[in-house]
Length: 478
Image 1: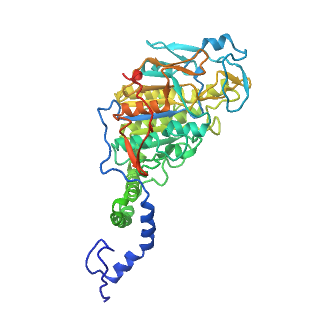
Image 2 (image 1 turned 45 degrees about the vertical axis):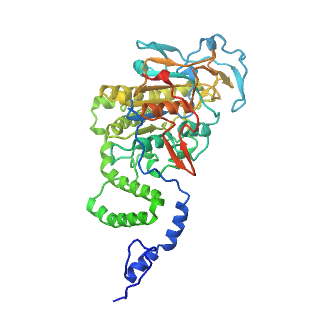
Image 3 (image 1 turned 90 degrees about the vertical axis):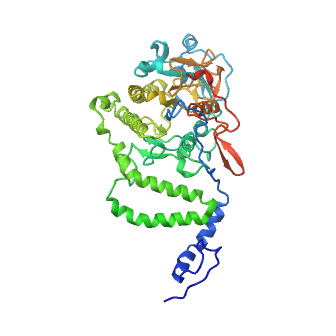
């Protein structure tokens, strides 16, 4: 029998003699632990207690319907009669630099607008289904971005910064609210085939613990919605994991206060295991009635509509089960990237995109409303910027960060209203301007947070989603 080896008590968590086998087992990880400790020395650490809403929230959850590429405000939500009157004439306002420097004539919308609901909100004819939900919408016509380029603008909308590396809106919400269902992630991205320019960093947890980053559900490839999630016999999977879990916990304890990242990884692993039972059930939309599936357009002859309909229906199922934030990406099949980015043929491109999302989004609103969930669910429909009221070439529109339109619905939003305004051409926001920081502050407010107090200490100072900017847009609140 081997003789006991005495090691200093400050070397190991246990005091007293241990066997040579135990000493070697521990020492085997020594150099790895040393390197890891150095790495964790610069890591941010969460406060002892997670944040909780600062006041009674109007919404418990949120959905981002991201219209990747930048829909044109004057062709969707902000009609301008002056464009009709001056179509084909030289543009009469001062023109700022454009992305592609191919400025054409004043370009009237190729679509008609119709008023809908008791509120009479005008919507483009490309949104006939959404028109039935007009009284639930608050259309904001005066949003302004800081960047004219897709990747930077996408980062800005998603994280409040034009560069990668900051936590996304979904990660902040997940960090603030926590989860209502330990078997599912708090933040889910329903991937329809197109990732916004800038890549998956749009959904990053940044310097927040990785527990709060977005989890991808693949609704495009036709394979597993979440890789390696197919459940198998619990005993055969759990036994080796019990040993791994014990080792992970002991490792985290040995790091003391620097173990937050390891603990986050452990929690992610545990969530992944529990998802094996939860994900197959939540993604099984065959449980839904035929009428519900038809309402979402799953029987549509347009396969892209059917796919986006599945994303919207799955969104409702995830929200029912406690997921806090869901973002839907656009579907692949219209353009290889940024589907709404119509530089060459806006009339055809915008019509195709609207045909994909119109029925499913309207169904999601109506379905949430019928189940009593809309009042506690905040929906945001937005691109990363708008488009020019003059043509790029002859039939397209260039990027325009100076004004774009979005809509919000549910969760404390004043439905049936229009907020803000652009100039008579729809080129610049001129009344009740809403910055992206203002938008983020308002979203957090509806979820129960003071955006100035929802912070995370990193690299020696407190960070927040809105940086040092942002005001809650009181005029959109119910």
